[in-house]
Length: 260
Image 1: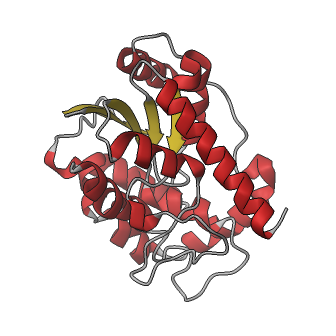
Image 2 (image 1 turned 180 degrees about the vertical axis):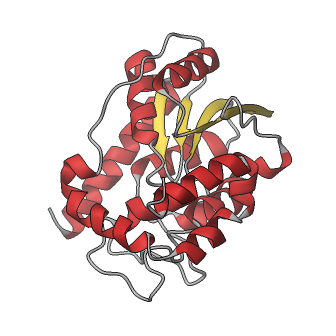
């Protein structure tokens, strides 16, 4: 499908999601996370538990959304753009009208995010690839340039419980659950079940390696092992110090550099 037909299909899917949102009589549940943060498994678990109340998006701030293809993967200021029907449906159905909703946001070691993103690219520029902009700072950019302008909330203003690996925030008219991707399934189930007030069970989904990216992913890991300074640079960011303990970051470093 190409050109006008593809665009028509996109608009039809968007209209369907908007209608679904409009028909809801209860708070929608929005799984809102940047790419490669294990959000798909959480979304599927919530859909099984709550059905049509659950929506997924990657972008919340309108300037980072696209209607059309081809669009630049990266904006002039280095931000990743996204074309997803859920982005526009949540924008027009939840954030702009400030409709009460519950947001689930995932956080993952940013080196793992960069590695997963890079595994889907055949080549990369520069000696520091794959730990380069915009992969290496995708989550920080997502919170600072996407979540904050869209919701008027920043995670840096709330203490993250690194023992629990989660935090719950009330930012009227929204409730926000932020979870670490490395929580085990049982803990995710407890957090999600309490948050949405119905039992939730995690489901297994195929990893990037199982979907055919295994060879590329292995190459990316090999390259990361030759970049200790860049791993350290990423682990010194505000995002890492906010969501991870020094001990956890040291463990991540050892694993990425093949020292574990």
